[in-house]
Picture (cartoon, rainbow, N blue to C red):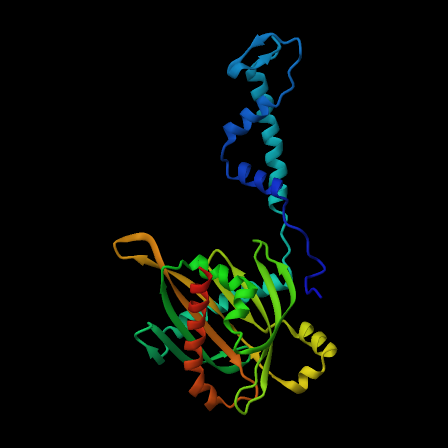
Amino acid sequence: MNEASSEEVSAHSPEQQQLVELVINEQNIDQLIENIVLDQPIEEEAEQEGPSGLRLEEAVEVKDIAEIAAAVIEEVKEEVKELAHVPVVKTQRQIQQETLEREFKEQIEGIMQAHVVHEDKKKAIKVHSRKTYLNGGEHLQFLVGIEHIGVTPQQYYDMVKDLKEFIKVGSNMRDNFELLEEEKTLDGEPIQTFANFGKKRAMMQGRMNFDTRYFNKSELIVVLSSQGNDGIRDAYLAKNPECNKKYSHSTTILSGFKFDPIFDKADATKVIGTHMFLLSTADHGSIPKWIIEKFAPKGMSEYIESFVEVMKKRL
């Protein structure tokens, strides 16, 4: 099932994009002219040896070829200008990703100023909490951070992107985990929609989420949200009606990971570790708010620690 717009068109081909960068940025023009000169057909009877060892007809001089090349470049520039102005139509998922990423970064920045509700100084873990207004309602939001020296942000990003490793982290919390849909963004990163079935705990029924993960490799962030998954969720539940009886529904309003580098104090260019942040904003369904407020901070701390443990085994 694909939520892509019917008006979607493909982006420029790699060859076209290379041409756009080459000509519009006005880089390597001399090299382009030389390439065109070298590509000119040479008559077999040509005997004269010209610049760079070229064998040319006596009647054809290099400057003439350069003029031809310059004219060709002007034609190419005009074609490239037309290509450059062709808009790349994004899918609904890609538009959604941009919106959620912007909100995610705003929420991260805001909750950094919120009060600390749990701290483990020995493990350098802090959990912040506040109430926030998102998606038309008030929600309890948590942010937990942890430092891990010896592992780069890119390594953590790659681990979270690996579905097997991601599932492994929360294996003691889940009954099941199913990938339902996957597509690629314009930069080649995946957009993954999955069903997540949490185990029953104490007197509470197991919870069921239908989330989508969006990856941004330029900023090393991973956003999770249930927003935009109504069609996928409804189709799944229509085929698996027993899930409605076994699980209560919870909604991930806006959650995700952010991986920041830790630099060496003696060398500001050397990355020596990762400061990993985990943001959670969710509607927990039927679970009372007082239970969330009491147990969520410690649960967030344990959850982010599990990423460190899995990473240690992965290396």
